[in-house]
Length: 258
Ligand code: ADP
Image 1 (cartoon, rainbow, N blue to C red):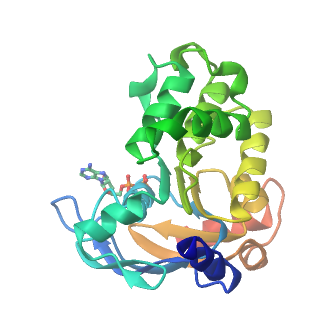
Image 2 (image 1 turned 180 degrees about the vertical axis):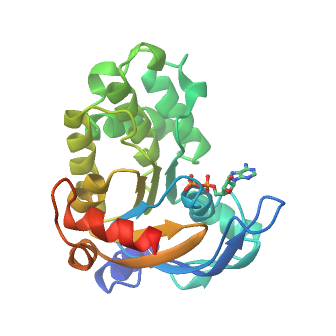
């Protein structure tokens, strides 16, 4: 109970955040990322950048599935510098990687409950937690269907349910709108906005509309570096609307091409 009150206090006073301090990562041949210094507060932060700019690498580190090779990841003011700290942190993070194909043969409800167990949700609570998460993302009608039998948008609703089934404080979604039609994309933006009311949400995308219409803040990556961070309005103010290009797109092009 006391822990819960402390968490609410953090939210209230804006201390509840994830921070990166000089974080670097490499896969073997030089640095693929960093050093990156950034803070993620409660709300929706959009992560945008060209292919290969380090978005997925950054998200894996923020999800706690890979450890930085330099610098530190911090949560609620503490450095996560041991595996036990990182393991504890992972339980409060919902991470949806790109295209988790391995789940195609699972029934939606079994899959969501399985992910709940991986996140440490007690057995007695899994069915209710799974049903509630499927309800939030509008996937209840598919709970008895195999993921492989669903449309892209329907399947993505199930995947989004897995990311929130344990009521995480941090939600990290790697390109959740890829390949979806406009109505599903609009639906996902509404989902992100509602999640961002109380959670730290980081969402990567290729689409400026997803950022301009769905996020509060933006991180722009290029060649493994964080090029720019600010609000959506600040980003739009950097660019100029022209035929076929929105102000935010113009700003993005300037940032990654300069
Ligand atoms: P993005 O998500 O923006 O496309 P990534 O984080 O996937 O960027 O990639 C950043 C850099 O790291 C790229 O140069 C990419 O080739 C490299 N990289 C990503 N994943 C691996 C991996 N598993 N092994 C080796 N290099 C990788």
